[in-house]
Image (tube, rainbow, N blue to C red):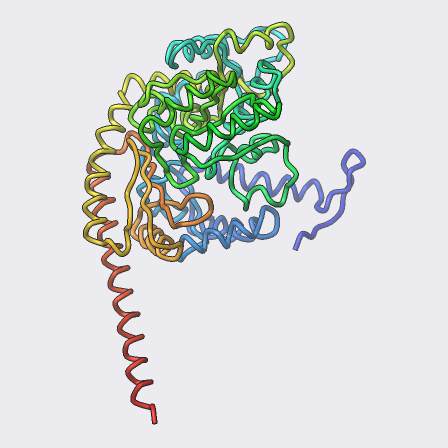
Length: 480
């Protein structure tokens, strides 16, 4: 229970004395700075992690972890490269990659070094003077993004990038309507949640920001009809918002010609094309930006997740000079206290350097092709369990016949030292999104472990079928 002696600090009632709070903070700070922990300290961390999440964060997280693992008390403690360790030192191969936030791996030394050096100089700027790294990073983005994209607004997260993109499209077009795709995911803040198409996330917060319309992903004809209908009744569309490849929706690839067709329809109806590359960008799909696979240039591009190099949260939205014009007279029309802070800019600049110098998009393409080929073979070997494989680069989805089977496979992988996760809060589609730096030996080990897991799932199904058959036989012998 949340108990303790009451004290007053600056007129605020505290449930513990100042001395007790200082003692708690001192203990945690001492542990953070230790290279090695005692068994007693490890046990204390494990126990308090569970109780604190239950009492002060959200007990729902514990139930979610239990559904993925047989040991929901596992506590993540350290990481490096493509692996992380729990509090007791057990190592896991990371095939989740922070939902796409760790393209360069865990604590890439060049990115860590850049952030540490900037921290020794300055952490947060005054907000009033010019901060040089923001300008340098924005120039780099203009250099490495497709087409005529030029101006950037730096944020602290992907959902903030989407929020800014939605505002910019309204500002430029003077229109109020948006079209997004069913199964799309663009964040959970109130504006971006309007574009996100998942009832479980949306229903509790309705009504959202009005004028979002959703059409099936990949259905160009339905998009055209919706644009035509809204135009016909005087509710013209400001922007079409899409992920080039849907991530949370189940790693759904667009049909051939779809994105090119969307681009043409946006041109015809005078609306903007916003591409959300928060998960697909920074080399994940085998190109620096997934839109490059189809030669499509958006009017507004959103990025996040791995943009901060897996070290500092960072995001951005950017557009061409024409779209940006109405942002210029009033540069504070949209603002962010921590967006583009010096630490985040240092991390993002280093992340771009690592991505290009280590040729991570090409590595993702080659490693992904190897992964996909072997996964297709496993799908042929276990067609009743692993029903479909799809993906591009190292953004891969494994589809199972139902949630229960997916969770069984995810648990089996976790128990054997491989971390994966489902999409959209279910496990019918399990994602494989390891760091793009993952060595081939680790990939082959993951494939071996997956094969072992599928064999175990198959054997378990055989036992269940055998028991059911035996029960039916026994029931039959008792008939009169």
